[in-house]
Length: 174
Image 1 (cartoon, helix red, strand yellow):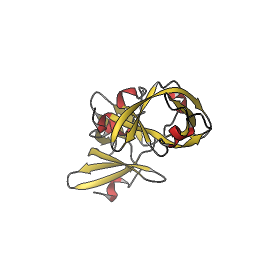
Image 2 (cartoon, rainbow, N blue to C red):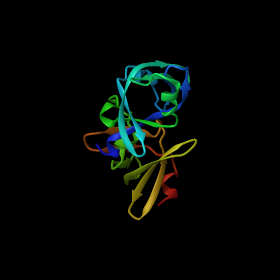
Image 3 (tube, rainbow, N blue to C red):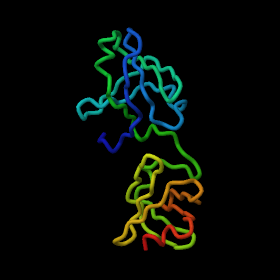
């Protein structure tokens, strides 16, 4: 597997107790979907290495206490602090309707209800308060907020995103 086959799950924050447990932050919308994980990949010096989970207990604010197999002391747990956790993209829960993962729609064609074909999604820019579709329209770049009210249809078969941009937004770029 190469790095593109993984998605970022979260990070090991600190030790928890003295029996090898760690506190992790799950960077996901719905932590309960990951409650029964059997393993994760930890990034050790740029390599994704599988670690098996003995137990995982969800806490509040997307945090969880995790006990990895064969990590039984606080010293063992300290060696994991700060490591990033990953899962294979194939482990992502399937989404339906207009829900999508950002990595999934890169390359989708975007069609606006008023302007028609406006281009291809090159990237999703994750800004502090708002993520943006970065769309290539010929030599120009168009930025559209990733907002449910704008997205009309996600067509996975045709790799097409139908939107209804607010009046004047696309005109700014054209």
